[in-house]
Image 1 (cartoon, rainbow, N blue to C red):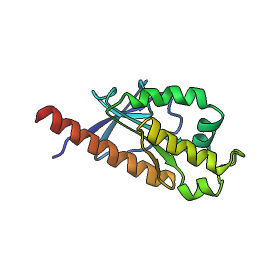
Image 2: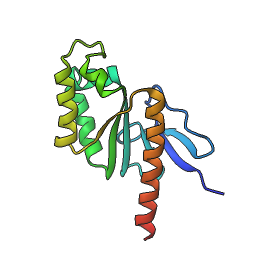
Image 3: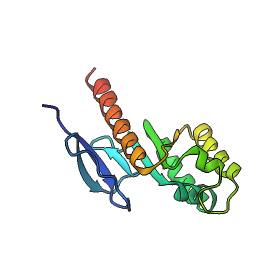
Image 4: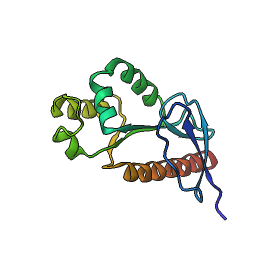
Length: 149
């Protein structure tokens, strides 16, 4: 029987994912960075979840606050931003903030290059949740292999 992977969900996360209970245990508490992490690896693993509208607003209107969050994420060994929307939606301006698609696209590229934090446009909430499950599972495996090996 496999052990459950212990996920920490930030207590400020307003729309937490419902993770597969046969694979994950979930605890809610404040995280130093991101919305999701692994128990005992809170400073090593961080996943920031954003709806497409929230991502667009964060990179344009809340830029200074978001850049502070990016600095915290960049300090982690494994960090990423997961967007519940597609790159096609970004390029078509389907996020309703009035910001030009090139500004949102450029901000995503800047995060990837300047902060070395990958931004994953996962299409929708269900695909994003599945991505986060896989990402955290793989991070747990990598950390265990390094710590035990």
